[in-house]
Image (cartoon, rainbow, N blue to C red; front, side, top):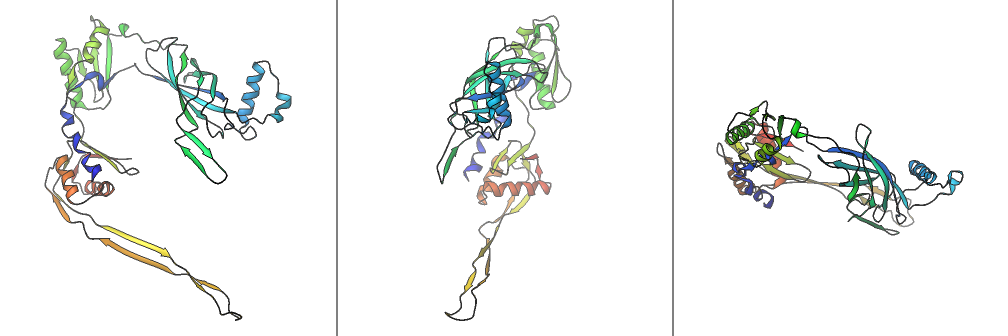
Length: 361
């Protein structure tokens, strides 16, 4: 019942005021994804097998040729396992300037088993347009590890993926000039007309003129002509507003997690929950003939099937329009666990009694 009681603290959270900057994004101000291909060296026999990862072999030969070392004629003798081919990814944040540093993620592409302790060599990071915006290099540090012996192995987390803090230097900027854009759009992270209207009213009330207008459930337009755009945006970001939320239930069947908003309501419904258990076991019998007899040993299959039901659960009735607290209390009274509650909520939704949107992941 612990997982159900953990839902209680969210009650009433939707009525709290939040800053506008925490629920909106300024259109055009965003990060950009970067990607690159590189090599990690210095591994302790945990890198790629060059006979299997041909791209690693070719990358190593090409890199050595650029450094003035020609081993292409003797490439068959390259048997090292101290190198691994990796994909390097990063997010270039908005307003990042040349010379600033960003974090990068390094992921193995071959059959390397552990990247810990290696060093990423100079790797250009490109955007979707093919231009290089950053260059990555640095030591690969990971809390994951992998160890194995002749008959057993132990692996913690993912040793073939690691992160290099401040591992890339920004070489090229993405120009964003807000001062030259008096017409801006604010984008709600959770689209909602009610929230958008409250944001627009709060902005207009604070600035004393109708500069904000709701265009759709996600977009709020701002006309800041004749104003200092930067100063006005900073002022708008700190304004407080009460966001509205859609009645929603989100369940994760894999982990048994259930998250419900405070405005979830359920019509009058009766709930009966029982568990049916079917246990099938195989217990074959061996028929052994007498010594010196002419019979043959035979295996006779035997299957045992046991069906049991849990009659401990009761029929419960939830009154019309219960709040989240009432719903959780009612489920606890019926002795319902989180995974059973997922099934119950899906059935209530199918019956048309759950007045909320349900998202199953």
